Image (cartoon, rainbow, N blue to C red):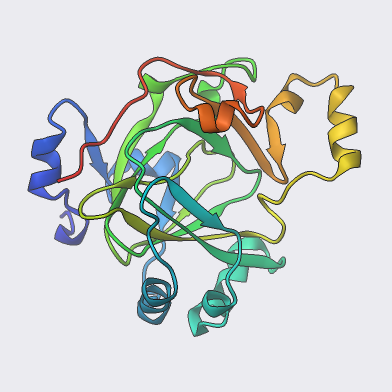
Length: 235
């Protein structure tokens, strides 16, 4: 029996009739990640809501925020990363389109501070470390307060807005993930014989951009997301 907590809001489904939005408790989600049940994140969600804001436009990402890392439940998160050092940060914004795809060679723990939607895509759809078709990404609804572990190498990017001014979310990753590459790392990439090297954009962050997302293209992200820049229409 399906849990109504994970159900797609009727207004969201109605606004996106041509897009199949899936639930986290569906069998389709199992290849991308799993729901972490029994974890009380109420303090963490409330803290994130109080300490962070939604920008007027675009998205904002902070790899780590002390106020979030000091929450009681955050001490449990290291278990999902083999007790390696982690960072507890956030991603908030007004995003509505897929824009690109990134992946990490580690899991990502995701907490929805507001209802939001994410595009997820299997690593196997990355063709020769060059292109991914937007049509191969699946769309999932993440209800407020849900906690999920997105598996390593699953392609994703910023969440999309469901309603109101935008979305808020908490992102947990290994320490130093998404930090800029140092100069030595950049130089080594120039002579890297492996085609995956062209996708390495930041530490533990491999990325491709849709050609319409000039914000990424202008930073040198590999243009490889092919097809319509799919959009989620908020309620």
